[in-house]
Length: 580
Image (cartoon, rainbow, N blue to C red; front, side, top):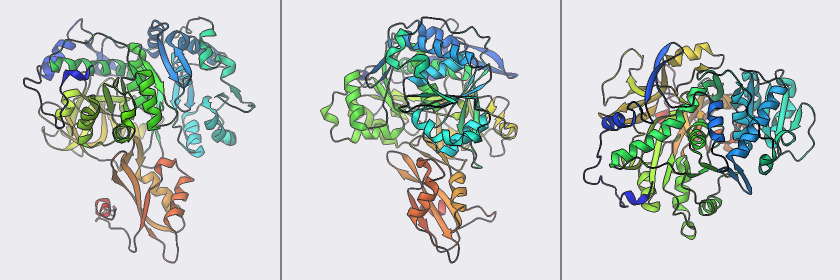
């Protein structure tokens, strides 16, 4: 969308006559029979559910659709450029090879690598033959990666060289793992590992692969497709089991949100155009895999990858590739806004900066608008909803900068009492529940946790929220003891358990302290065993050796006394925040 649609102001006020259409009128236009966002009701695991009628039934069907984008560019990484036609050739070749080595429907295939052109190839190759892809967090330590592989029962691992170096020493702990296919290794590989390049070559050579079809498979929309791990409150990650429908839903949900913003403004529906997105969120997150990659593949857009976030490098890419949209988490927007060299680059192609997955200051939406003349966007979702449930963009976001938006038309929200027994009136705070075709099937091999979290098609989110009289959602707090650092979930108990394992620690509490660009950072307060000693650096190193680096407390304070507790023995973390 052009930034000329509204005049840039330091403090945004709604233009006269806005919104031209109510949300109810927008839905009536967009979702009517025969329209692009028409809905129908189907049964999902026995629960009648409203779904997008025009969503691709499976990821294999989405891949076939993407093949029709032909020689349009899809993936760009440094000097590597891959068209949709070339990507499809690589997907088909890898899918056939996975079948040749014994991968069958329902087998788990893990994917552990940075954002590289190989990532979407592997993802679609495995899911198109009915395998369940397990995207593992590339920032995890070796022990965390081993847990994901063992817990999922992975039989085939596809990874980059850095992840393989972490995993290879632990093969004796992975009895289910039969094959490892490694990308971009600079050293010789030994059994059970082999080079991905032996199968599909390097990205710039995908065009030389045979032009062949994907293997024919009997797949249904609600067949399992993914396991994304989300840290658990007990410290052990849980695998959210997603379906083909969960992912393909996002392709339509994102389009619906853009169309709704145009109609709210009084515009006609925009003609489809190819857009260029700078993807800096890790692909192992639902945000990137589902909310970014799915609409990209559906619409024939471009994804530009960056090896790791570097503001200057990002601005160079935006200028060179004429990037239209970027974001992912708030700190990326802040970095672009505040960099002293920003004026040296032509960033005029940017018309949208969107993010989610971390708390953001209300001023950020208006800063994006003021500095770039671009429209801000955010939304709310979680691993258990395969990303998008609410979407908040353009004038609606500027008008309600503390909201995460209303649910997309195919989703429902309600606010429930703490015990889940009754719904709470509009405007009052309670636990947010969400329902829709994006809600996952449950937790992998965790029937106890599944029964606790998923109720008759609804997911209990653990977020405390209120809904206003127009259905816009306002997240107030988290019921779960969780910190979100730059989009990465940190469950306090996981870090606290590691701290408690240190021989000098008697009492430990992890809390989130505000950070302008990351949203929050983890900080710890500890009480030491009498006669024992430890310092901040020692405890930080202790955690770093056992957990991913983003979970390490940025500060550790020491309390002379035991930490304050309530009558039930729970540490009063709100009382500790003032220490920082």
